[in-house]
Image (tube, rainbow over all chains, first blue to last red; front, side, top):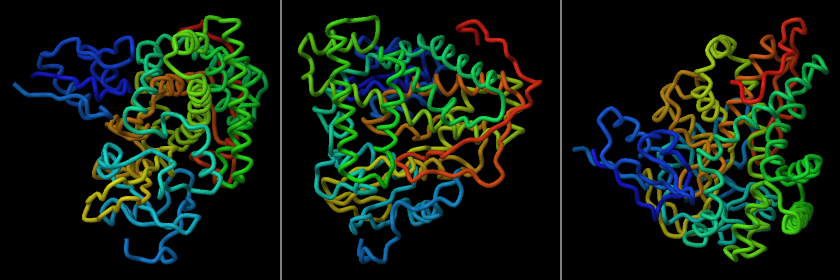
Amino acid sequence: MRVAIDRDRCVGAGQCVMTAPDVFDQDYDGLSVLLQADPPEHLADDVDLAAQLCPAQAITVDAD
Amino acid sequence: MTQAPEQLPAFPMARETPFDPPPAYAAARDAGGLAPVRLWDGRRAWLVTGYHEVRALLSDPRISADRDRPGFPFPSSGRQALERSGRTFITMDGTDHRRLRKLFTRYFSVKRIEKLRPMVQEVVDELVTDLLAAGPPADLVPTLALEVPGRTICRVLGMPLEDRHRFQALDHERNTLTTTPERVVQATEEMLAYTDDLITKKQHEPADDLLSELVTDHLSSGAAEREELVAAVRLLITAGHETTANMIALSVATLLRHPEQLRELQADPSLVRNAVEELLRYISIFHISPTRVATEPIEIAGQRIEAGDGVITAVAGANRDSRAFPDADVFDIHREARHHVAFGYGVHQCLGQPLARVELQSVIETLFRRIPSLHLAVDGPLSVKEYAFLSLVALPVSWDDSRTSTHTPEVGQQ
């Protein structure tokens, strides 16, 4: 699975960090950054939920 | 919207019980997710209560949060005056909104707020110790619900603790739907003057607190105008105050009305996090908001919203949509509720939500652990205010004095 963040859309609500802390973090400004762009399969549900919860629709997930 | 306004239901509608949105919310949902209503000034607006429609509209670029646009819907004349005075980033769109919100996101990141958990726990423990010392009965609205966010905000920002009562009184006037426009504007100006003084004090005597940090990061550096910072700090003080307070009171009341689930929570504190998400969904204190206005025509759910139409995305209705939450009117601490829209949706979603969660988790775990026999001490139904948020007038409770824990745990202990 490939994950991408559109940082121009991110509003720093933190939903992704709460949902998938192994994949997402917040930078100095509180905006989302990826810890890994190709997370292992066992994190897929969390990553999908993070994408669904993101209020700015800034996360895209492509299945392999 | 072809019906004449006088034929439409008047908004806001009264609730039949404090715990359920007005029946008109379900009717609008059944009508496809949205339905026209009539406002205090005789104008029409769309009441949106479908989960998918609320999410779609709050993330639609053809929807504006700018209160100065013609057609913007308000629930009362007082709220119109309030929402148009002391503008902050929550009433802006596009790049203006983005620039100002981004100045504050870093202070509310999940990890930074998590570091405040021991401090919040200390506040909650102090308050429960005071409740126990005073003995039953008690009204939990002034003694706990308002005090947890009030004391937390004072400590985080570096505001003198005694100032919280002045701020709470002003905010109460502003949020009461029947307050006159003149008085609302006066209350906002008093708050802004207070905030301006506070910022001046921090400029002269910086301390280890968020206000001093904001002054250094944004005022000294020129990243924000003084007026922008004053308005935003006023927002930071109020936004996490009554919202969290009302969520605390209504959460305690909801759990006391579901004793079996409460017993499960008391037996297994690891359920608290999910229970808080369900409480946020089920209660949804944003009962008549967020509000927006369409800037272009929008076709949705078989209806056409025209440019200039007011749009009321009532998240209290969306969070009871059974298309998104099976048996949505049932309170169930075990359900998957994380996708609720209690903090809104779109670019304006609540910035302080990590702090609200920490406060709610801490209060619920601590209160029912230290006062396990807590129960409602009121015969009739609880009453709600005519208010911008869902808000209890009082929460009378009592407990068995012989079954309490007077021991205050060490700071930070979970």
